[in-house]
Length: 225
Image 1: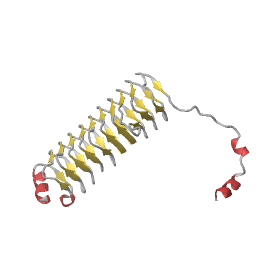
Image 2: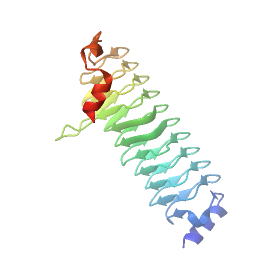
Image 3: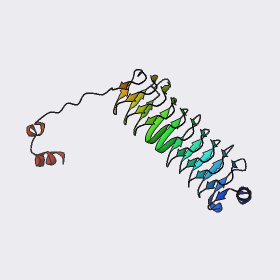
Image 4: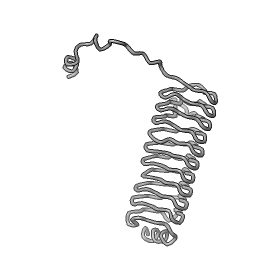
């Protein structure tokens, strides 16, 4: 059955790099000139457009991948990925997510029940949960959408053209207005107006001469041992 499915797809113009190691359900549809690398598992009602690249060891189930998208070693479940969007490597798009066109969902990024509008980018190490991310937003490394308080899930809205600095926590429910900036290392618990800069972190304090009050370095190392 696997051989018959793969042969049919190749006859329709799909490029399977290693058909013997590619696992595709009979219900999956793939457009012409798309390339599927070895180890991929494509399941359910998945629809993949034309000229897409599905990188090795990707798993896609009940998802829609539009034309010219690139999925590299990632998992996509019950979600939609727009044209020319790059996913991965090692990204996890969970059910209920809608990723727009020309977006980037980079390495070790997780998206759950969220919308990323056209041109939005989360390049690495980011969690986007129960959120609406506007067009052309840049999410810095380590951004976390804090959507769960232990009892309820809440939503975060980030407007268009925002810049979210690295290691930012957006504690839902919260709204960041269009064109706003968030300073790196901030924990945002209140709405940020459009075009504003949100800063929510302790001011740096340097204690001069602190090391001189401690035992010598060699003694400190012995105490650790």
